[in-house]
Length: 460
Image 1 (cartoon, rainbow, N blue to C red):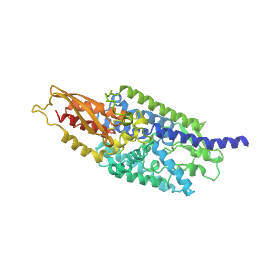
Image 2: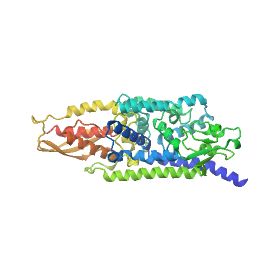
Image 3: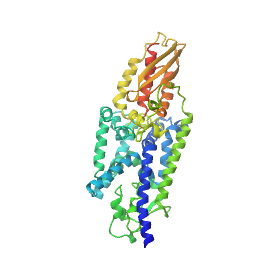
């Protein structure tokens, strides 16, 4: 009896503690995996419908998809339950709510089931109405982007900036936070478009929650403890795509009747969760390292301090591409720890700022010679990028054409700036114009580079 009680006590303690530790580490080290995975799906979809999909060329942008999707198909939604930064916020709010109100707020199974369909409707709307039709009206409405700008390790929330550039997203985020006090994992249950994808593909998983009903009492503790509101009391085996493998039901069962299983063989939840998290983290960092090896080298004046060049963020790689953006996703989550905040803001404010930035770029486009070419020489110019940071470049013109663009200094995060730099500069040189497309997820960095080149060429 003593051994059984000790085992039960350890189970109740270890699982939630380990999951919380992994959530915290993921929040700090891998904050943008969820938006990166969704952006990768966007990249794949748009490449397919345009007939331009090439997995080799898109590989750097698909790191998060490669990291998360296969594991989800095979093992289920461990990412949602153990590694998602936005989900971690939901769990924190729920924990505070349970302490504050001393009770759990319940919603009927019928209403819960109906509301869970909303995320599928939202997913279809994003894919068809935004990605496919290139709608830009909703770009500033992503709560992920507002979340990334507000929740950053080592920085005070930039509420004024978010309110000025992402007001719709801020309002939606506040509504989600309030709702999360009353319903566990509110966003994950009802609104997350990536969760909708995971819910479908995880039905093929080999993991299960086993709960023989003939050994159950009438307590329904497992069902009441489920963050996703799954009616576990109804079946012997949980096959729902809504399950996020948090294992709260396993920890809560007073009879130890709820177990985790792989191919119907019992497995320790601690081992399953840890291995899934380690595997996803390993794939992500390996992919990020491989990508960094092929990234374009940037010559930067050392007067730009490392603090200016790389900002450490917790939550905000958040938007290697906004989930409500119609632009192709072009960011990976390489160097997640150092790059999150800037990426979030760049994607998040595309709608509010893209038109004005295009106007600035257009106005700054220098008058060309009668032959349509620039005057030979080397010119220096500056432009405003992320959070009003300055990007300074040197532009070389030979035989009347732009032949080279070198960065002298910049105030941005290196991984995302590197990606914007290589793409934008290539397009500028190719088109001989600063009016080129911004890299999705690095909108501000892209515009800063364009404005800097345009400023330099204004002297040509």
